[in-house]
Image (tube, rainbow, N blue to C red; front, top):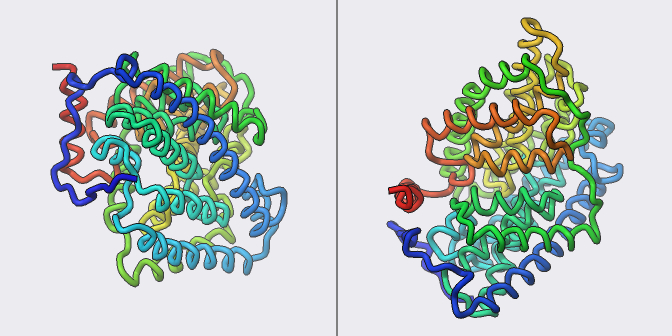
Length: 453
């Protein structure tokens, strides 16, 4: 793979109005073949990483390996502590090994797409993906989508090199590969495609849509050969009503403000990760403390999917919801601060679900009649849209994740739109921009805003 200069202090992304279309270039045939092959490679990688996650969960916590909450609730106190201490040791040792695995520094997928033409150190990226899956399976309060996104980026880089694609084609293909990884991991091909463009690439240009859809479609189809084709969250067909529409209008701005605070906390955690010998000590302390706290709050373990499912069907007590609203984002931020690698998608959904459920419970005292689980679903979408600043992809993702489409579409659109507007007005940085420096953020914003001028 070509060498990359990671020391650039003032990177300049290409001007959007000067980008040639990948679909009309002389290497169009090679590009489309690379899109399909990236989808296949990403689907295989996402399926393998998902099975690895389930294997780790089964070995560490028992049970079927698909529900860490249920298994942790039946585990003894010492198991909580020992497994999480082990996760801390694995994290510290893994980070040290990864640092020496390649001569350059690690690079975030978003930064790679915008400032390095999508180029990433292959072995280090794969190693980070595997490490993140292992520690999330052991209970770290992070998401699992980071690993398949990285697998998709590596596959896209490999086939870009093989097809000798241009930098712009590579940049697009890496974004498509990252979105395809999410689509394959969660069974959300259309949402994954839109996520790759709106959030990762930062542009919903028509010429980019078809490659993103094809890559995500192929990756998801391939992953379904090994993974079940079912909705991630099972919820009833919640009806819309005047009460939940008014609630959505009022809560959207609140979710936007909360999301800004969450994004800034994630940014702080990423910028203050441990260095030197602290890389080995910090994860042990943080994850060990998480293990102790999880004795009373097992809902803090893993990416939060299980507790979100319970909130969506009104199976979490209000007092516990309030406690988790404070503890779950704190656990995620501190895990990142300790240097543990992992995703933020599902933990962010969980924060939104807790926020929506808590505010919905209070609203029911003034205007009863709305199913409590619907508030959690709407809060989930609001925080996800505001933190990623991807309202369109969020709406589609929620439809695919829940298998529902029209039953509560009006309050869903309202809460997503208002939350995103408020968050974007206060903070231009999304949760996936956390690793970008201030100079990189300024350059990205300039490139994104230029087409509208």
